[in-house]
Image 1 (cartoon, rainbow, N blue to C red):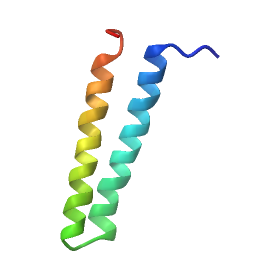
Image 2: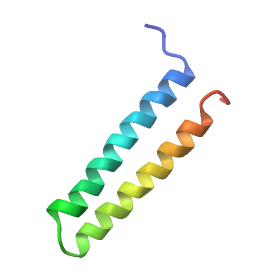
Image 3: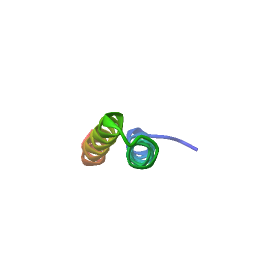
Image 4: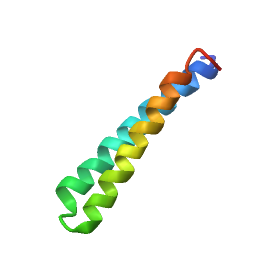
Length: 60
């Protein structure tokens, strides 16, 4: 299976979305204190990076 730049960016996007969902879930369900807000903020940051990777597909 040949992996070009777009395939690698697509895999990175999926991995970052999965990581963002898991971090938001940790912040929402596991940690009820102030630490939960940090986990959720980092999860939203992962979503932003995944959005950038998705926008770069086809342009790199």
